[in-house]
Length: 447
Image (cartoon, rainbow, N blue to C red; front, side, top):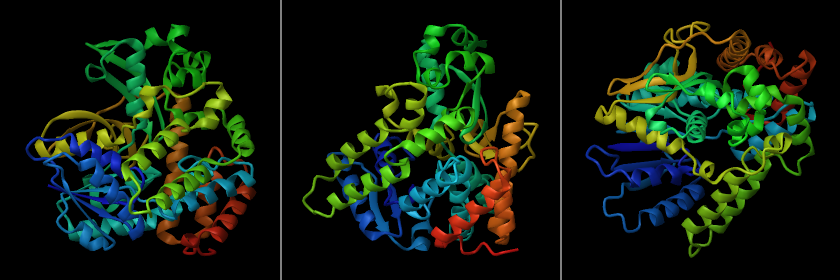
């Protein structure tokens, strides 16, 4: 079975390959095709994978190409993890937004909109190529903003594109760990959009364990989200939010912390990864060791400004191990082998969340089998959550409309309607500044 990874020169690709190395069952992935526009990065990542595979006799063979059509032909699964504009683009997204006093995070607020406007046209082109060159392939999307990009691709691939994210998985795992529950035995009632969801219950043998967590200040203070949001706020919500909701609930404090930081997250990762790829220009450099060192620093500093604002302290060791690669592997196994499982995924709504239409991509538990991912019907969200989900989905739809039409006015509307952008004039300045620094936004015309 062949897996094609788009963005194959990306830093996190070895996580996916490492997961594949642990799968020895019949029907596993036997070939990995790496595609990237940067041949030098492809070479660096290929060296890391070769060192990972040392001593594994049945390791999936790896080949790399800069030809997209060649990479897609014959693929059974396509994993999309591209970054349009690179980390330099992410750093610019953050800088421009913060200069206007609004959040520049890559998936939330102004930064997420800018990233989406750059990425959607490229993602749509990929979806069309997959439909033409690999019509039987399943596309697994990790490209951010994951929900928005998945919805753009679904208009061309239907239910054969599925978005994944490790945030809900990590959140459910942390709650289960605190409650002394095996995550595999728990049903996690999670619903929302990508980076905008809530755990409303954690059921074991039909009994909801979440009220026990919310009633115990000691338990609430013993895991990351409890410290990040505070016990009082979680009890007020009656749910545990995805960590990215910290940007909404504590927006002013977070923007201030980002403005005062020595470097934004994007600038930090840009410089850090530049050092990694520069190190691997030396053909004798130990590739896997260099990657492991860089990854450890990357994970330890994740959402550092938010944790600093909340006084949440350092990340726990169990939360430094990633997770999206495990979701991807579980999803591929469920489809390829009909190993039925339940996963929290980004899929078309299909009536599962009543506040949104059928085609809206939502993040929700799904039953997965050989025929794909099937969303489980969810109870209605409380009013405050429904309002936020509907507002952000409306923004995503304006981003898709702007990407399709090239309308600059529609792009302004997308920014202006976002809950974290507080002025139409700010929205206009954001569009002006982003189009100035991003050549990929030249398609936005004045109309």
